[in-house]
Image (cartoon, rainbow, N blue to C red):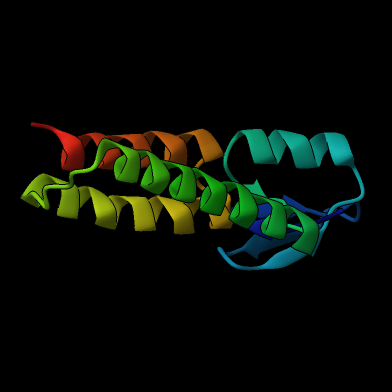
Length: 121
């Protein structure tokens, strides 16, 4: 299984040799249990497949389009400083979801806060 190093750590090979791994290094791990342990501890990430990437993009786009339709039904939008700040957060969260750093639910919550901030009376 190929993984990407997120935090530096030392890897010990069967022959006893140690190798220092740095963020961004791509390595092959034979033992999937060890890979999952390193993943759970935040040392590595599993590369995202193209199918998963497209699926996440479609889900996040649908979330935003749904929120925009709901705003249009409400019939008013006030561009507040808070709404503009949350727009930037929505974008950062989108990128973080695509990098595997945040979850789809984090994006949904940010979009909901954006919608609420612009439609308050």
